[in-house]
Image (tube, rainbow over all chains, first blue to last red; front, top):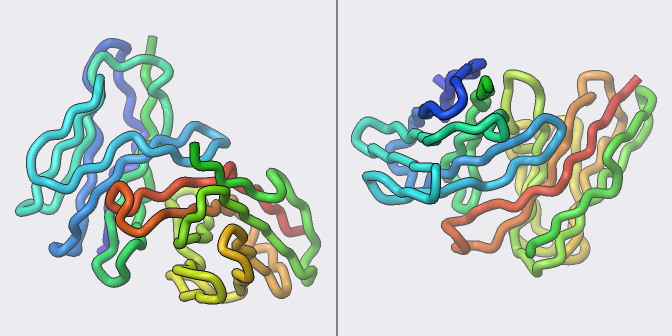
Length: 112
Length: 114
């Protein structure tokens, strides 16, 4: 089993709808969780990080963390075509502090 | 703003060549990382460094080595390039404990080995 798993997609969502991206992880002791956005041909950029159970909101983005179920999700409200990108989930590795383990990414397409 | 730069955006090399990929960060970050990214496989850690002259193997170190002689610079070396090392290479840096170890990425180097 991979340490961090994401559905690779593609996930297609109409403009204005809510896009929901999910990620599961295997190390129960993981403490920090990150969502990066990567446009085609570009490098990843951080959207949000979360470390406490529950929801964390930043503008149109909401990260949700459930440590008991070992999943973290990202909701994008009022999706825009500019949100079309690959979204990478990253989890801080408990085996080596300060390392991140990345999922394979979910490709999201927002249809106008 | 944190800036991480990489020496080349695109690089074409021949099998057997020795290849150097350079990464420089300007924010005095202790940690630096080298990843490769391949379709369907996500980012895989090759090597990382917690401090000058310190290095640790990541998940896929075979065929690679690294050098960190100065805090701001982290080099990835392909001793004898092979076609299966054709990939996107991403460098990242972080400060221990800052934003729970958020990593900042460079623009990437797309390496093609012929």
